[in-house]
Length: 412
Image 1 (cartoon, rainbow, N blue to C red):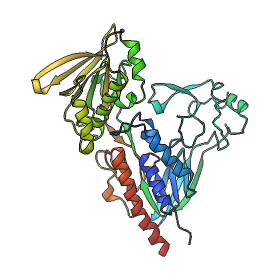
Image 2 (cartoon, rainbow, N blue to C red):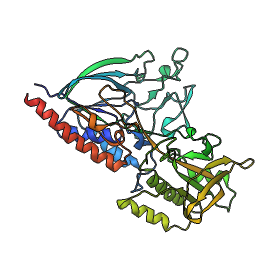
Image 3 (cartoon, rainbow, N blue to C red):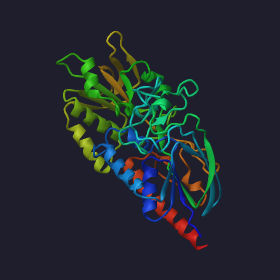
Image 4 (tube, rainbow, N blue to C red):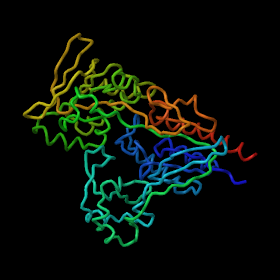
């Protein structure tokens, strides 16, 4: 009897980890990712926390493991619509979006200059634009171009098709729906940042001097501050912690990683712009374990001030475009206003929704792992706010449990 594969939904760090660990343990794996590339939110980071190293190194190692393992079957631009059956004998229905660029693509890039349409780059959270045909970054996996079907002028433009030498483009491609038999399911559906526009008092969207923490990961702050500050002066950056988190009107829970992210970003800016000054406004600083070493570094930096107090409002000043921040200093028992060159909103994490009949969620949107049927396992940010390290550990643990399901199914 042929062993039925393990299904992993989500191609972020949790899903990738589960895929390579399962495949190297001898399991067949189907990895389903809704984006046209793997990597998830980690691929959008500038540095890991707390090592402060680029995420590309860790991702590239895992991509190499995927390339070298024939047991891993990747379905990008795909989503799971339905799962039926019981543990060890599930059937899954998968929808794959139209693949306008196929495996013959060599990533030569000749199609890009002739494309007449631009789109916001979701990898950079809209802070830059790409053409309708694009490749996310230099280590994208699979490494080939993709076409954004929402903006491409397929019926009125075929410039990319004309210039492609490898028959890699098919503008008539259509979606596919198919089924696969599987033994168990790992839910690694990840997260998205809370929409800062839902907190209007913090001014997001009123000017480019107010950004979110995820946007900051992709900004070139060195050149940015050169353009906004006179020579010889220093830029001031304010951080507003818990922007939408721990708030009954928005996210009632702590998002777990925001404090560590801000500490990391403060050190990154100090490295890139040594003359910069920072103020971090926080409710509580929630870091633990070896992450406390990063907090110690921040506390020892004379150019970084930690202020216990929640930011109440922010407005863009005109002229000049500086940000006026209204906040409190709890330890001094006073309200204060400061002016900053930039305000960074530490927005929280929101779980991605899956929409499967078997998956119930808690009031906060996270999967209720205790209610999952036998053969379903949820990991990382599908279950609770989690950092990279936690996500990797939970993914590995889920593979061990999935391996038991597969082995038991084989004995029947």
